[in-house]
Length: 178
Ligand code: OFO
Image: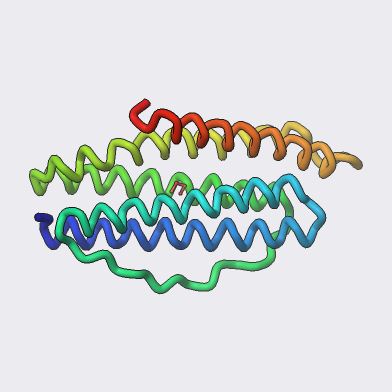
């Protein structure tokens, strides 16, 4: 059992997660085109993660007798000015998602929906980590700067961020309650 207000709010979140998945996929493709293999792999991985975030809500809605709406997704941008711009946009988007999760939590209290509140705890934690990760990447890119070999070093760093994200995913899968 879920209220219409909560159902609609969760469907909005489904749309946002789906857009994040497409957005990061478009960024991955641009990075590939620019020869930034490490950044592309990282963004492909993030894109799949966002799809999983979407599906988790999708299944939750079915479980509580709600209706999960398959979202229409607007065309994301396909061209970017620089790898720095890409990760600034990732950071902006993650902050937007965090705000949206916080709004959902506020609705849970208004609706006395403690099931959904409990379900959303995973997202609260995930957003803290994702926002922190995006900010750290952006800081690292700024630190490396715009020198001659900067793109080479940025791309190398991105492979390390990917390895860390993959290790975290493996740890979460091994111990989902942690
Ligand atoms: Fe779905 O966590 Fe990023 O946006």
